[in-house]
Image (cartoon, rainbow, N blue to C red; front, side, top):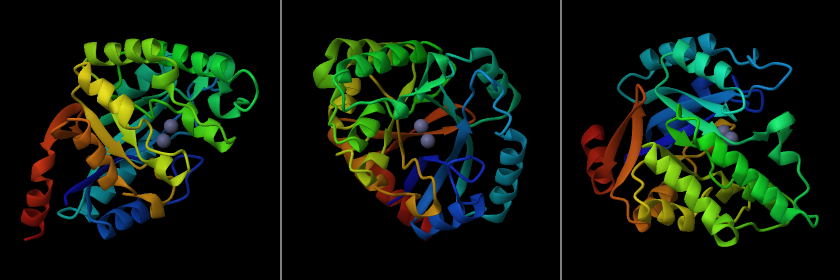
Length: 278
Ligand SMILES: [Zn+2]
Ligand SMILES: [Zn+2]
């Protein structure tokens, strides 16, 4: 099957360890044909330009890798913007300045630089933390300059680390609907982030229920990404993500090129793979 992985970090992200070369080799080995490198741009108050992220160097890495793996792998230049709505000038400047193919917007932090990974979900304030996350996501999706929203129900990942299961759609259906409707109205997409399957979250981020809701409300664009932070995880559970997309009623998986969505028919992914390897 023709596979794509639209959420991958290299060692240009501080929390990831593999070089782009290692990522490309792993992708080829796992029969992934189209990858988007989405290293972190994670502004904080003290460093709103997030200088540790070197977009120029990322671009150069990708230029070289495109030459080296030509005919074997399509490599997209992407970025994962953390909470761009809180640092709009810096985030907008970055994406204006570089020729990105794909931009993910992720709600990692709330105002005052508090990271959702640092919250105590096991205490009595679980509902309050989830509401805060959704209020933050509601602002984020209005920011308009992204292609897809990253890991829609991220708090699920962090709560699961503390032994707590969270289902945002079940607990907060109105808030989830409102956010999904904004995404759809702005003609943006969501991703299926398969990392949850490796992290005992009990499913993808988001899982079937939210993907189906996005579809039922009129959503079109779905990408699938592993959120790999090391080369071993590149392409992990992408097939499962594609199955989930199909099960939710989508006939297409979305890939991006120069910020333009391209809809790939799921039923043709087998054929396409055979043709390319012939
Ligand atoms: Zn993220
Ligand atoms: Zn990520």
